[in-house]
Image (cartoon, rainbow, N blue to C red; front, side, top):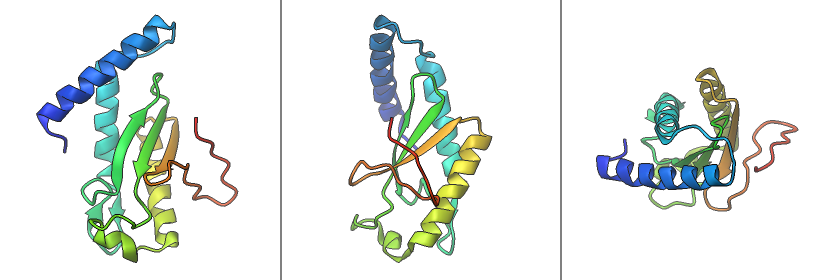
Length: 140
């Protein structure tokens, strides 16, 4: 999904951040491992279909960014679920109950792929999206 030039830029940024973390004594995996995990997350999210629209989360543009913790145990999925983006026509028609199902499906699939913790973050506000009843997720 991402172009080769963008992959190189992302890898360089990731490599720099990992180097800085190691200098601070933080235990981190290699940049290549991080990139592979991010690719895997993108593949998994592209299998989450939005009911009634035949679009997946990635190709629809709902997933804006992916972030991975240094130890690769937590994936942050930055998502535009509000429908406030004028380029996201289908978002306006999806009600909250459908989004709840979509996010639960995405979380289950990401956990099945080996991600220990999944956090969904609202693109427009930066707030953690609480989609389960009694959800106590906190932004790390």
